[in-house]
Length: 226
Image (cartoon, rainbow, N blue to C red; front, side, top):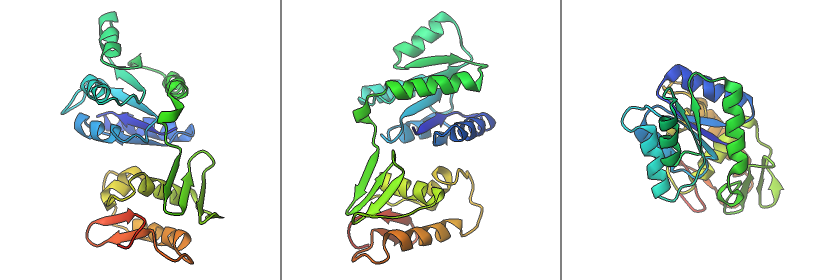
């Protein structure tokens, strides 16, 4: 289950992302409402954890916009506002659950997992395919041409992100934030090294490459020449 945490307090966001990952749930974070809305429109997320008070766009506005666009990804609202009226307003805005601060992470985790179970199965993407390359999130298996491609955990996550954005150029910044959880560029060649290893595993020995480098821009997975 993949979770998006929209939280402007950096320390809180980092704690939640780390704790969710340790509980077996990959998680991304957005620090403001506009960024959060843009990321939430990605159907790959199974649950949204949305702080109510955010810069640029508040949490309820994010949820209302998504619901108006027929995006039904379950959303848990976090807020210091805990009156009955506040909770009712959050739920009427399209939130699926409402948790008042301060909260225990164990309760947040239980609510997130409950929302994940409640989600409609058909809305959750568990399998990506580009040409004869197939990634299955449930079995954590990758095949190309029917042959299993063994990947390390980071390589799998890198490929999953690239395949979720198949046909789109993915920048270094996007990879640093969503695959490595860096919100700054460490000025290392870590991305180049992993992309090179991944390319050798999914492309070597096959008639056409699927992982392409777009000079000056980033990388793209697509079934066709760069």
